[in-house]
Image (cartoon, rainbow, N blue to C red; front, top):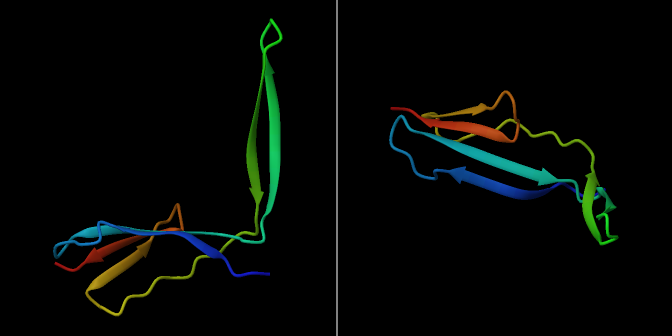
Length: 92
């Protein structure tokens, strides 16, 4: 099995004043995920048909580790509702 692949790693904003807060978002995907093609049609009363598709990814659940920082003046708090988001606060 391959390691998860990070598909998003954003810090916004990337620069803050003392006391400022930023949001760090990291999202990853399972490269071994099974991808299924879904297809459906829609037809009007005269027989005109449109076909549309979508893809469904079925992947292993991913666990995000606790963040760390080498600066003790920076506080990191993982969002309680979404473990892919970390609230980053610089001390005043």
